Amino acid sequence: MKDTFIHQGMRKKLVATLQKKGITNTEVLAAVNTIPRHLFMDSGFLDHAYVDKAFPIAADQTISQPYTVARQTELLNITSGATILEIGTGSGYQTAVLLEMGATVYSIERQNELFKKTKRFLPKLGYRPKKLIFGDGYKGHPEAAPYDGIIVTAGAPFVPKALLAQLKVGAKLVIPVGDDVQIMTVFTRTSATGFDKEEFGEFRFVPLLEDKN
Ligand code: SAH
Image (cartoon, rainbow, N blue to C red):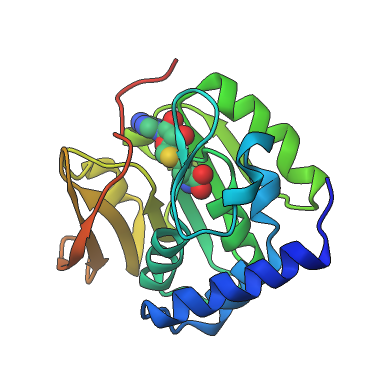
């Protein structure tokens, strides 16, 4: 569990790359600059940790591309102290970004192997989500709703109604929608029954699967 000057230098370059690609939110960039992404990956991929690409983690899943994490987080438009629900804990990297930004984080993972691994791993780096949940993200986590934001980090074939229902008025759901290719879609709750919808281009994610295993 080492974070060296070399890693820190590579992170600075990654931050510069993200800025070139259009990320402007300074808190998001600061989080990427701080978090040792290489520790979230299997040792075989250490050399790739600070390249702007997605990489395999356990259980046939991926750690999202840094640009994607940064873009989705920027679109959530949160302030410190916000309560956020994340669907798809995976490696926990996105969770760490949200925690660095001062959010209270609930995160759901459907793969038991990954859930257990990440639950053990995050506290070792000092990251303490409010709750990691082994379950089906399609249902959200009504126990702690409503949220100041919900972020889905897997490709959703459709927009789960339960997630829209768990937003506060004014809060956003950031969700990649589609089968093979996804359109990054942001829903803003405008009232008890009203939602605005905006679209932010194409992305590719592993699929949001139903139920858990
Ligand atoms: N945020 C993660 C991205 C992991 S990839 C990271 O930063 O590493 C997407 C994750 O979503 C995978 O771990 C996958 O197992 C999980 N997933 C897929 N369908 C899900 C569902 N219905 N509920 C919760 N998690 C789900």
